[in-house]
Amino acid sequence: MKSSTKDSLITLAMGTFAVCTVISVIYLFNFFYNKPSIKLAEYTVYATIKGKKPDPKIGRAKIAENHQNDKPATFDADGVSRRFQVKGRLSLAYLYIEALVDYNRPLTVYDDVYFKINDLGGHLIPDGNALPVPPAEISRYLYDLRSISYYPTINAKGKKLGTKHDLLELLHDGANIKINAFISSDRPGSVMKEVSIYYECFKESKCSINEIK
Image 1 (cartoon, rainbow, N blue to C red):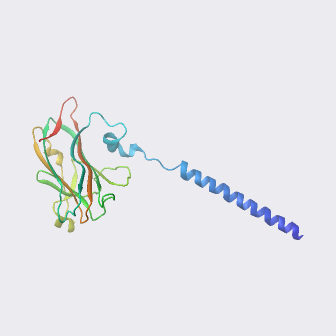
Image 2: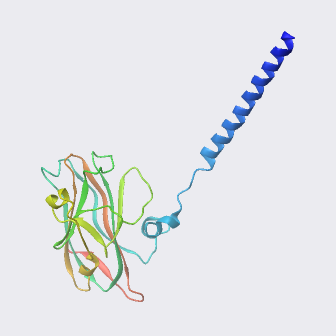
Image 3: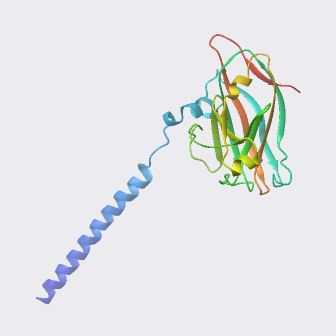
C-alpha cells in the first residue's frame, strides 16, 4: 500500500514537472519569437525621412550634428546658429532632432530643446502634436513645422504658458532665415546628435534650403 502511494506521488510529481516544463517552453517561445515588432506603418513620416529606404524627393537642411556642450546651459548654452536661404516653394517641412544629456542619456522632463527660426520659437514642447517615432535609447523628436508648440522663455515654461505657430510660413521662396538651437539642461554633457529640417517641394518644382556661409 505504501509502495503504491509512493509510486502515485512520484507519478504526480513527474506529471507536474512535465506540465511546468511545457508551459515554460511555450512562454519562452512566445517571448523570444513572438515579440511585437515595430510597424513602420505607425511611423510613416519617420520612415520617409529616416527609414531604410528614405524618400529620394525629401531634401535635408543640416543644422547641427554631434554638437556637444560640456557645460550646463544655465552657465553656457553653447548652441548652434546658422543662416539659410530658401529657394522655391516647399510643400512640407519637418523638424527632426536626436538629443542626449549626460553624454549618453535621453532627456528628462526637466530638459528640452530650444529651437528658433528668426523671431519665432523657443523651448519645444514634446506634446501631442509631435509625430510618432520608434523607441530608442536616445531622445528623438519629430515635428511638422506647420504646428510647433513651444514656450517662448524659460519663465513661460515654468508657468506652462505655451504657444503654437506655423514655422513653415517662414520658409517661403527667397527667405533668408536664421536658426538657433541648443539643449536646455542644468547638467553638463548635452549632445545634439542631429538637428535637421527635412523638406519636400511642390509637385514638379524645385526647391532648396542652403546654408549661407
